[in-house]
Amino acid sequence: MKKLLTMAAVLLASASLQAQDVEAGVQPEDVPAVATTVEPAAVVVNQTLKFGYLSYKQVLEAMDGYDETQRTIAGLRQAYEQELSRSEEMFSKQFSEYVDGQKSFPDNIRLKRQKELQQTMEQSLQFKQEAKALLEQKEEEALDQLRGRLNGVISEIGTERGYAFVLNTDNNSYPFVNGGLGDDITSEVLNRLNMK
Image (cartoon, rainbow, N blue to C red; front, side, top):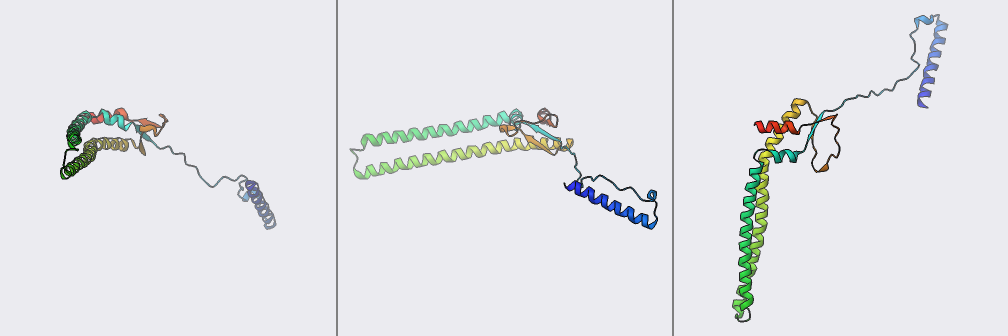
């Protein structure tokens, strides 16, 4: 409807101008032609962004140094688990001794042993929490070095190829990526990482 009204206004304006020209003695060939169709004012730009994609986890796990990092973390985890096990055995022994002698202990010894058991249990729990936090921190620190190298190579490739971005396809974040519009850079990233 809007187009029709616009065309009618243009035609009326054209007819009015022609009438004025006839009165003024202007010949039709001297007047420029008026467009009879109206084009939309907006211009659509068809620009396709270039991008790359890869499985970050797959590349990280294939990197030189990843297995060594995992072995180091596993060694730390085993050391902490052994210490926790020793702590639990010590608590079990103390508890067993307390239960066996509880009826024969005078009140002050019984209370002292209860406090010792409580302390041992609290220390064991605290150590367990600290060990878990320390393990997570050590793993993050070790992996941060690998991630730094990996991110550097991804940035190099993205800049060289003029990508707008590089997608991480892990965790099914992008269940479909059109290979015709983006490039799988997994192999290229691995090749460059292994050359460094």
